[in-house]
Length: 115
Image 1 (cartoon, one colour):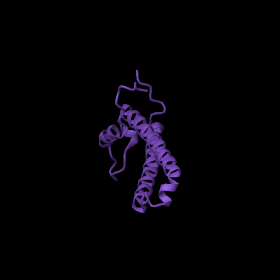
Image 2 (image 1 turned 45 degrees about the horizontal axis):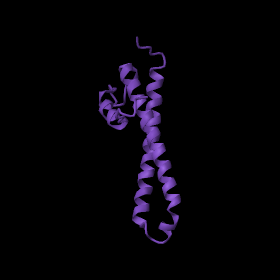
Image 3 (image 1 turned 120 degrees about the horizontal axis):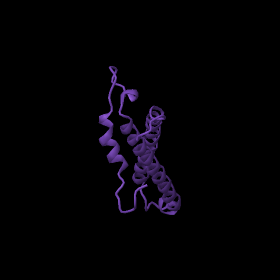
Image 4 (image 1 turned 45 degrees about the vertical axis):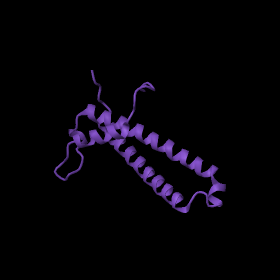
């Protein structure tokens, strides 16, 4: 884990690394042909991103639960709740995608031992 002084940007790193993956003739990711070091880095980024998303969604849930009175009296608008619902849904879907991506990468690099 990096020190607190080092900025960890797993989404930015993941987005920069994904285009480097080779594709098959059917335009699917060819995990078997990919550089193992790249796959390990992608899996690390995906797992860190998934963790950040899970923690963030949990934090949003806590904030919503503790703001029930403000929701009830209209201080927090229905539009705000709708937007939070959509972003929480998208974050959940993205976290699931990150988990599947990390699993593919880890499966291909199970026997990888960099020297």
